[in-house]
Image 1: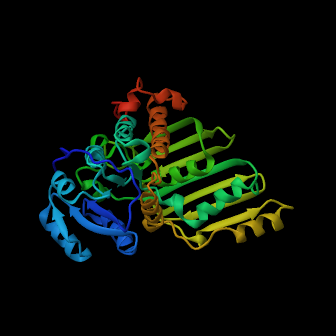
Image 2 (image 1 turned 90 degrees about the vertical axis):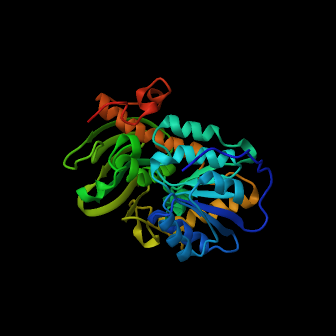
Image 3 (image 1 turned 180 degrees about the horizontal axis):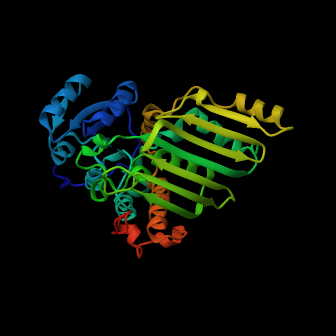
Length: 374
């Protein structure tokens, strides 16, 4: 797929009417994007799809009633000139495609992981258009469910007190056959194993709640799967606010589960789900003597929004219609990618790692593996 871009167009004004969107890559994840967009006809108009496989493209277009199809990204950008492009391709293609879209004046919503390295995502961020766009946003939809928003609101209001102890576990199962897809389980095309491609959602949600991390000590191993990357990582993460978290990312766990638990001074908040949550997946346990205050605030908080793609895409579209940067910003995504790089760096080097250890002089800035092998 060519990524040579047409001349850039300035996006210096809010968008009137529905946001003209295009989808690049028409595999399974693109279905979630397109179904969410189709459910928002007042906000979005899906005007084109791109895929290098013409048969896959034709099937996708017919199913979703997309008027125009292309096997070349450059041609689509030049002829259609969309406001927003959803990049749903494998991770190794993201940087070039995102940069091509930004150069053509289109904002981007890119699937996770947004890039293969810190160096790549910094390049992508540098290609953004500044205060007036175009912008890059990354799909981290767990931030946008009402459960997470309610916890954040209670934290901001001081209801929960300081966060003290946390766990963040992504314990999933993928058989060896899952890795038969050529780009999976390889540093050069996927950027990492479950730490990078699976647990990234839970880790992003944890960071969005607990804030800046200061140190990580980790191990990453290839326990049983025939891959280049890890199939398991375990980390201890310290946060600037004083909390400490255990983080587990596994593709070896037959009983699959995604779990975040945060013990605050005045309550324990816990989320247990698998690939997405609703309000019923959250529980809160007040500390003794805090029951009335905590439970009243919890019940009064935001309800009714699940954590799927729809929740984030609504906010992305609304931001673009206002002429503002959509969430999750490149800076937010870089913070999450830096923690993932820290897990790998600590594992390979056998020592605690801080964010300052991961700058341009570090081998883990350019490659998550630091150029090493497990």
